[in-house]
Length: 363
Length: 269
Image (cartoon, rainbow over all chains, first blue to last red; front, side, top):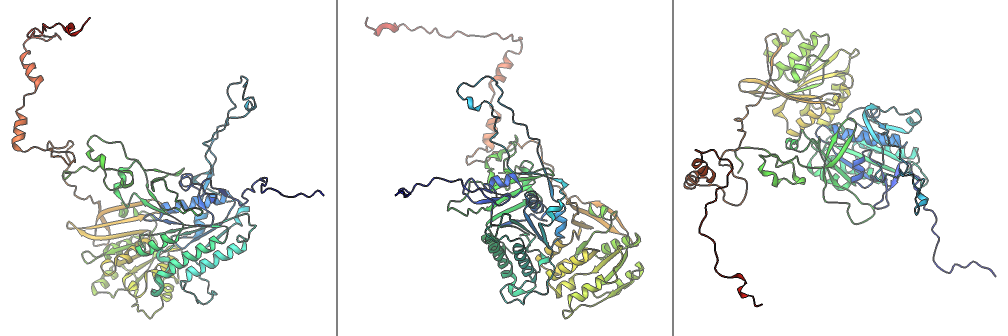
């Protein structure tokens, strides 16, 4: 009797089903599905991008201009990858943001030359007709802010906005969350996810949510003195739980200079990834550093699948935001000038405070 | 250079913060006068109780205005509605004098939302008294308005410093002197440069010592001794300065260096 008995536990490896969610990549480091943030250098720092299902907090620079640029890159990447987008803002009309996204730029890719020497390869003859591979190819798109991206008509149905319409038909606030703006926002997020069925197992797309300037005076957190602090953190927590259970990533920017330190600390603990931006205007000492527009600090990077943190020592980076590029790089000092006796004190991570300032009081 | 540029453009929503040292109302009124001369109709809301001097000012400017005293029982919506009513055409400017009574009765957030709804269509120029509110409130107001100016007295003159966030994303800071004429014109707008401390010399002074834990500086006695050290090449130069030196090597033979001992003596061959 020919019975196919399985004697050993050896199983022939079948092809791993590749990720079928648009716009995500499996991270090389820890096998999470990562969503590109739109900025190449930021993706490199975060080992592939934002994990799917995470809440990213961006602590804005003084007037939020660079944070807005980062949000635009995030949305533009989503538009190019044909993801669903939800943009929420009380500061301005979210359509202003969506209509001014940077357009992707295809860099002139050098056509990979064939192997130059045409002589026969005696040993490696199988490689004779192959092209040269460039292992350092840039993954991801580059964007140009000066050319507004015209979202194609087919894509327009993938976009939703929330601009603070006060929905009076909300259920009476029974829970702890009292702020009407927050309630409205969260219900909009839930409806959007249901509409596009992003919480089902078979969903093949994801939702990129951006909330601009959450916590600014327009949100009226101070309306109800009893719940001024709980509303803020409760909303973030609820948002996090929503994105965890669906194919979604949320990027929230907060004007942390306007909020109390306690609130900011609590939101840092809540969020999965925390990035702090500091522009040159806030700290004139930064001018001593080589032409960066500001400092970007990764206050927190979350590693969802392992205990070991993703850290390589430096968490402080400088960023340069031009119309063509948003570049994040490690800080480096300007070359030592001859009068600069204090060069030895400068270290990359604290480069701001002890600049090469000359004064008669140097002792 | 905000004050210089702001008058040449369509009205920008501005908040002027003043204090006891300098009243902001003259600047406020001069801006309004300028815009009204350029064809904007001004809707002036006065929430501060007017002083008699102010009544005459207003008559001079030929502005029609209405005072309303706000109290906390009123709903902010009604105040907001009074701002937006009759605002059909584009050339309307709302002037609020001042925001302080409003802030005392309602929270910053509520006023922020009300102003935002207004700012969507109309520019707002508002006055606020900085010494009556706390820092957090003023920071929030600065956040709401694209252009915020603070006036104060400095060196006997009126100084206006502020920031203007343009829609294009450019942010300008400025510190300017200004003065207001009797006819409520803005003049003498000059940039204010803070008095720099004495210009640094290019080279470090002689006694500058690099930072270290060693004592590298010299006291008076040591300095004198140092100044008396004769440097070697100088001495030689003075000696041979009469003849032109042609790069000769001058070797003075000293005692002959003969050693009588046979170096191979200790070898046993």
